[in-house]
Image 1: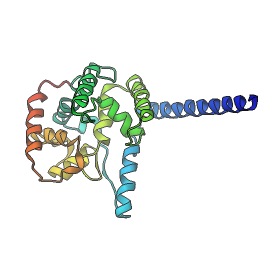
Image 2: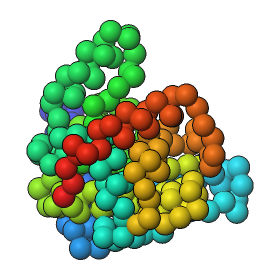
Image 3: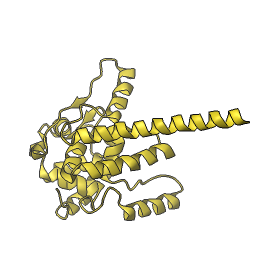
Image 4: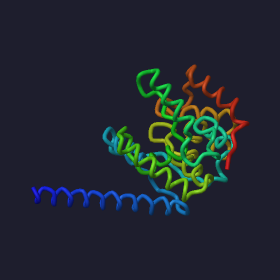
Amino acid sequence: MKWLFRWTWRIVLIAACGVALLQFWFLAHVWYYAGHNPDITAFMKMRLEKMQDVDPRARLRHRWVPYARISVQLKRAIIAAEDARFLDHEGFDWDAIQKAYEKNLKKGRIVSGGSTISQQLAKNLFLSGERTWWRKGEEAVLTVMIETILTKRRILEIYLNVIEWGNGVFGAEAAAQYHFGTNAASLNAEQAARLAAMVPSPRRYVPGRETAYLQHRTDVILARMNAAQVP
């Protein structure tokens, strides 16, 4: 039995070292992103692979633009739609998490996540789309790293440049061009609210597509935008 104990202990020690190295790798990348823009995210890589399974020539639509060249209307719309307490929390909105839990319990399935912009950014930058306890735990650790190292302004800047807004369409600049034929700096309030309304299901919408839900959600976001505070 002693040999079994020794090997079990060694395996546990090796696994712990692997986890520690992974966390250091994540930490180093978050630190790097404080001053450098990510070329591609884990989620973008996953989407590109799926697109190229269908068409090997497929490419992502993505162009980074600095924070100052993104419409303040889009910043307000995203915060109003995705994370109204973005400037106040430290990565987790516990009230939103509680409400999401109660809603999911009532529906008997996961219909709401309660994730903040920081949590969504952690997932998009580094993690796969699978729903596992390990991934949710890693997402929480990454969220703490992001909130500790990056400013709110930088978090929002990266987020607006990497989230999906259509099949293979990533970031505010590509989204503005794809959906409205304009650039991210020129988006007006209604266009910004419409883009924010698409975030939960971005691949459902192509340019010009109208649905009752999309219009209703756009109107709700428009009504909330003036109260949204941006960094």
